[in-house]
Length: 555
Image: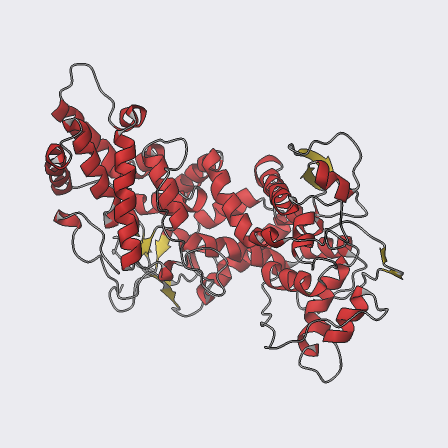
């Protein structure tokens, strides 16, 4: 990795553990919460692009992200990891390094040109001279930027840097010049750009407890996707994050903050693959009355729906798959067959028909994004349910799979079945028993998600026996299918596993599976809400401790 700094103690290579930022298996085990295995993990993890953007915004108490002439490059995507920026892939190349330098300079300039932002980080007190004001700024702001206390040497180094601001920027007043130079340097420091965990003391059980500030950082980037606030850092400083109860109290507080909405919405966007909605493109010949804005409308519905589930209704996995509450504007109301007064530019809470709709899988976004421009697509609908919701291992199709042939009088289901389930073909093994049974229950929804009972001259056939918890389970339609999925151990474990992946910044490892299983069982048997799931993961030993790296640390 490339060190990012501005001279002095921040220069030189980053702390190295020999493993980058990833994780590797330490063996298996499990059982009680205090006996669960914890995967080895790197101690240095770069902020994701979205985390950098939000952290910079919140460091200066800005109401919105800073406008940059050249935004930071997008984080790399890793096969099999559904979130942006798997930790071990968050390296820094010369292009990103240059982008960080440029962005730090632009942010520093914008801050020092806005008096309200200066006042937020360095408030002027009557009778205070410039040096006192500068010291108070450094003492209060640098710990927020680095997410930990600063040393005397660091304070002295940045104080000297502040004093040279008038030389570096003679065109601005000396105080603003000092601020500008310090901000530039701090935003390029590895202590801002990376989440660095320095705790190394191994306890008797062989694990390393993170210190309060490291726990505050993990907690903040999980629940808020941004830097810790002053209250969280104060809790760390007071030792309140040294035990599970203190962490739980802070997690509950943070989930009541609007910043949690932003982070958890991001989780759902990736877990439910709503980016795919932007590819919705129904044929205007077959669907002439459907709004051209359907992709963005569908995305807005899902955002309203998941917000309602988590923050209004206090729901969990069961509610995600069975709730008949959603939000509709005029275009969606037409597709859902709702009567009443709807506006195109406003969404309102509605109850959908019980015999036609049940949760996320029967909403327009999922259905229309897994369809062709003309017909439903049971193959991709089935793959989504199997892979994303049940965490089944469904391999990618072989190369050169021919497209569906002409219908020749067949229904959509008959056509797909004939094409993918023919005896003695490579397709049959996956499609006949796994993929198609997951997709066929949704045949009662057309390519834009409208409910239907006929497919042209054919009655729709929605009966199937999808593999649920390893057992072929007969269902009559999507409503019963959603209910069965909502009661599936595999689905609850899978969703908990997604949250663990999100929290740890990497794909699920063997050591994580005991925790996912335990919390998943509780999600199913106790009906835990998504809030409770996030809190349980945030207070787990896997989140509050780390395992030693075998080559560097030992009990």
